[in-house]
Amino acid sequence: MTTPKMPVSILKKATNPATNSSSNSRDDRNRALALHHAGLIQQRKDIELEILLSMETLMDYPLATFPYNASNPSPEDAKTFKDLLWPFQPSDYDALLVERNINGHCGYTLCPNPRLKEEGGGKYRVIYKSGKAKDFKVVEKEELEKWCSEDCARRALYVRVQLSETPAWERGAFQSLGRIDLLDEPKSDDVVVMDGIAQMQLGGEERDRQQKTANLALERGDRGTAAQSGLVDVRIQENQVQGNAQPPSLDIDNGDLSRRLDDMHLALEGHIPTFGTGRQISQDEEDTDWKL
Amino acid sequence: MSTEEDRQAKAREAESRESARLWRAWRTVHEMLQDRGYTLTEEEVTISLDNFKSQFTGADGSINRSMMKFSANPSDAMMKRYSNLPTDREPTPAPPDIGTIWVEFLPDSNVGIKQMRNFAQHLSSNNFHTGILITTVNITSAALKIIPAVAADTRIETFLEQDLLVNITHHDLVPKHVLLSKEEKTALLQRYRLKDTQLPRVQTSDPVARYLGLRRGQVVKIIRMSETAGRYASYRLCV
Image 1 (spheres, chains in turn orange, purple):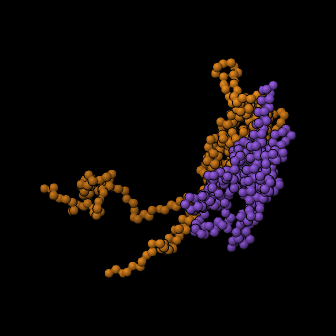
Image 2 (cartoon, rainbow over the protein chains, first blue to last red):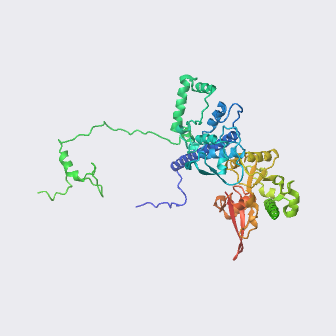
Image 3 (cartoon, rainbow over the protein chains, first blue to last red):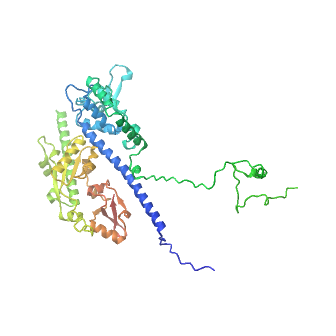
């Protein structure tokens, strides 16, 4: 006899403490996930703002005047230029060129000259310097007006090709450490001295070790919020061992081998499948009709 | 001699065409601000071409864009429409997020970061709540990134001069858009038992949304003519 069951509502979820706690943990997990992604977006926005501010700074470069020029920039300006340029993508660099041109500067950031203004109207210009056919080019006037000279164009594009196409917030530690070289690095004495100072090991081993740990952490990607809040929760659960472990052996003595030879044609990679009732194939149940 | 006359005639024609363009943009901006609820006199909005020319013609005989700037104050009705509702948690709600608006036509042939910074600087130094910058050319992408960067201080809207030659809301196929106040919005959501995200949407970059200066979370009532029902109202949430 069955006891009459209580009608169960399909609308209301049965509330018991077990499901409650699990939903709580799920909420926590979702919140952590949402926070993690919000953190990523915030990181991206920060970098974009940084790029904008760097662009505003670099718009009016170079700061140093007379003895320095585009081929021999002042070491401070060159250093700031390289430092500020790390999050730039080529497209950001192009935007910087446009902004500099709007303000009448040469497109190359370390060049103090004003940009060229081509005389006369027309949209295109014909260039042929050497008189050979391969040097003959038809160029847009705007392209020519970006720079003060061809050398500056070469310098600026030399920097541009070193920039990474990957957005700064997606770069790994390896890429973000890349240095930018200028086409004609300043060769003056004080720069050599500056480089020597920069390469000197001032902090000794301790600082070196810290730097290496930081680099390793960066390479692993331990900087996001996910790593801090432990979004990936790894718990190691040991298997419980009952009895002593025994190595497999070939038991010829108790007639096991003959039994195994009988089933061997059924074995799939050592496993003998059982169908339906899950009945074990055993010696006594086996079909014996074929036996004489 | 005739070629010289031709040239002069052409130059004059180009000039008058240019001033007519500017006059139309000027009128559209005024109509836009009036539709948003700023107080402007009727003479300011319906200025005639001759009056406009006499007011803004510079020394060289053409219209001087750098003289074309004005400010307007929100009307009481507009203040009321933008006011926040008192809630249980905040019995004294924040004042409406609206204030004096500054409109400026920029004559520059290039608009970059510097021009944008200057405009933002001018707005914040003169305590203008909102600024509308009307340019003849596209603003560079880097300069547009300044708008969210200074959004905490001032609101900046940008329009192209050529987009303002015609008032789009006067077109036959553009239905009437009415901004709902917060009170009306809650009433609407209660009436239909909706969450605001369940409403149809309109983008902030939508031409009419830009015309009305809609912000995220505001709801517009769109009134269309219907052959069967006479009027048909739908509501859209600005995203």
